[in-house]
Image 1 (tube, one colour):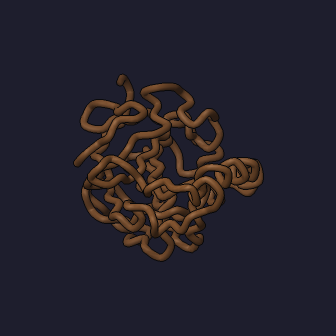
Image 2: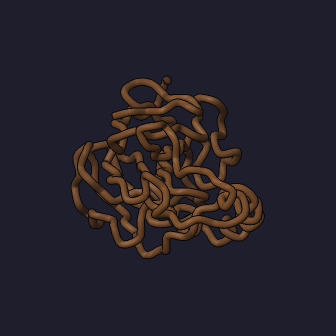
Image 3: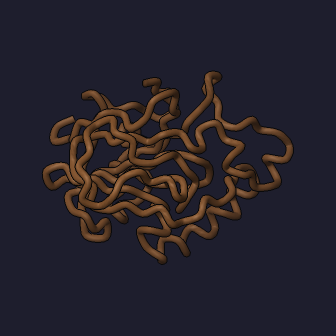
Length: 203
């Protein structure tokens, strides 16, 4: 992809691709907060699945600890400098089935509240003027500090369910400035390619 920033995958193990810009742009259905080329990765087990679905899943929210990837290490996808590190937001219950519909109805409120309400716990890494955001991290588990230099593969936090998230996953985006309100989205690839929705990436 011309003009794309090539990244290392920011994790190990098996992860399901969702909301990929390989399938549509804007990938998340909006250009707000520089998310046009954002991508989501959902951690899955050896069977390629997230938490088991049962009758209770359809009618009630679930604790994030029930999901196989909650707490999995998140790694820096680039060499760069940490310019923001936030991990004070709570990890809320996961929402599937009917609870996901009710949760979707509250999304406008989170958008109005701004970036942190959407990103939850997050790390921003500057790589020569391009900023990579790693979002929805677990509360209290950000392992880096502002001003710290990181290399690709260094641990920066753990997968959580904070911010605008229906189940534990990692949201990644790149942008041309630190402030997502004013920044423009930057396309990304991973090892020169971009996985599509429904693919399972194994690192």
